[in-house]
Length: 341
Image (cartoon, rainbow, N blue to C red; front, side, top):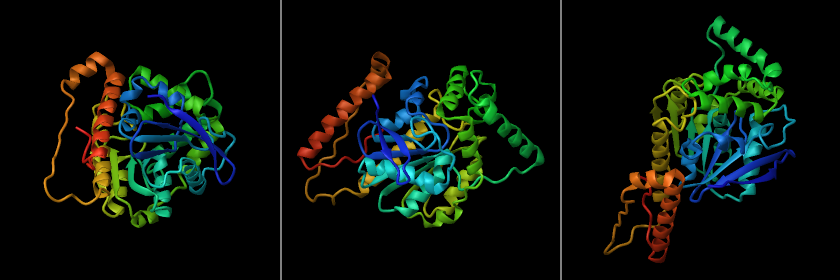
């Protein structure tokens, strides 16, 4: 699926790049670490990544936050208010009256803040691998390690050789293969200057949105990996415990972001799809009285189809199938209950 990249301007004059792909209910990703809308798509097996999975049944929106990727680069302030302005500019430019919000990693606190300030715009909140705050290092050894890593960022981030960025990659993706490691090293390099990355990392330590968690009034799903090194599982558990009615879905694995080769990709996608389907069923018209027909359709031989057509071809066939079904439902005042496995 080809993405479309456009630009908008925040209320404080920063130009933000955003990309859209796929069809269906809108789902907006907020990701605060290194992003680059074009380079992200060079990940091996992109269509099987979690971002590819989110594009299958949704109008999926990604954007480069200020200072990163295709957005304005010369930025040194990364306050929560500034990052919320980025998100506001994107959803307003797209004229989205209501949408689901996916706050990933350091983007979680931004998504939380937006959901509290604009509850009428957010239909569902999904928090993956995120946190309300990052506690200070527990031991002197941990503090020394963080200090040593920070000292390498400004002088080493833009080097052609990746040894300094590799320090961060090994913590984000400890179980990645060689190609995935090479890709993430390069993503970090092209995303931003070392000075920008250092400023962002410094701002993360000042984030604390715990007082906002009890104020979240939209249905919330928290997904977190048990072995996450960058963002330990206890941080996800804290989010779920403090957000009213939040649901926690644990995933196995150590990589901060599930990679295309990991089975947790489909578990992540299924959890999100089922959560989103609840919103669709809640907003449908009252059930009709009298005789009701319930139709179940299936892609016969889907495994062999995927092997023959490839992932992209099989997904295109599935989208055509969904379009035919939805058009038929529309002409007969029907309702789609669920469109996942």
